[in-house]
Image (spheres, rainbow, N blue to C red):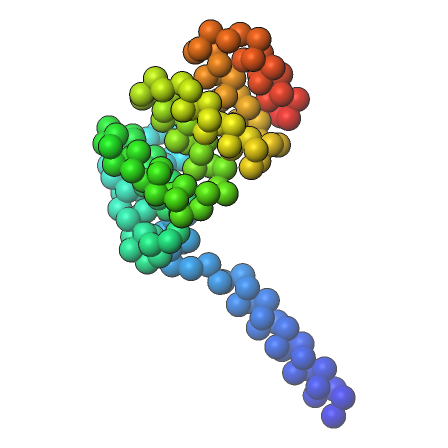
Length: 165
């Protein structure tokens, strides 16, 4: 009897472990495919359009999945669909105001496409507040300070980025 009970417990624990490994939602799986397409070393128009489709699928499957909006915003940005990119960055932050990546990418968008450096600084400040150990966030804020000709602040951020790397 004891051996049967131990076997049943082991079986249940094993099944739970397998379920945990395979518990990724369809929306997360679609997001992962889109990120793979965005992060490819050689980005192509076709690849970015495919990424856009996978992020749209992720959003259809889970309209509250903020990370999918960030991914779709990046795809729109690459495709020069600036208004759509901005709307998706804003939606991602609305859905998850604690996602440092959303602030980081919107900050980059403000700096690179709109030359709205003060807005970029605010977004980079928020990304750093949420994830202070991410060197990329410090580096990007430093680049923005450099664009504002605030060299001392830029150097402080660059130093922090190096220290964290």
